[in-house]
Length: 328
Image (cartoon, rainbow, N blue to C red):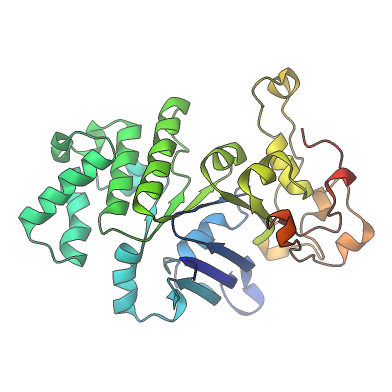
């Protein structure tokens, strides 16, 4: 049994004629000790999916499907059980640590809070655990007395990771954890996350718009567009040999080291993702797709693939990589 199984997850905001579909039938699996990346442009449904995993969405959201965490469906949990699972079962590292931390409380108190509330630990035990967590994320224990504004961006992000680990969760969801960091600090944070996942045998769902970061960090990679997964497979394969036109466009949007042409003029993708309230018929990507066929405007494709291809699945009528030309 996998640590996390998402089955036909659908998230809709509002109801009736005003309903807006944000996530449309997503299926994903994450074993313990593995790292799954989720990529896509802003507005494709990544963060909505992340928040849905622990039912952190607003009251206007309607959810259906299954979110199985260690075999238990998060969507059917009572509030008492859900409250416990939100820290001991799974936790989230949000993007923008300065906005997620309380500016008027010392970071040691903020890390200790879930330990005191959820593990019912004595204050002395919680303080010792705070020290252990700070050491795990590479911060001096003395920084427990600091306020968020007294820390650098990288240090604040390490504090967020320490908080996520406070109650020994089985799953960590990292939503754009390095977006606001410079490349050197970003690399440090990514290596730290990888190390913690491996050492503690936890699962990581990491969300980003940057395929290069996800390919370097994760075992498998799923690409989302307009609320659906359009490609999923081994991270290195999806990044270097994407088969869906959208996956190829995302990969080509980033300059490649050693490739002067892409460095001077990285490829882009014209237009914007569709408004979830007014999705086009058929494949939602077809209005922006340079290789769309007539059928693409009529039929929405399902993910297809097989185990012989290491589980690389694509939702496109043009399944074969050589139908598109070079991935660079």
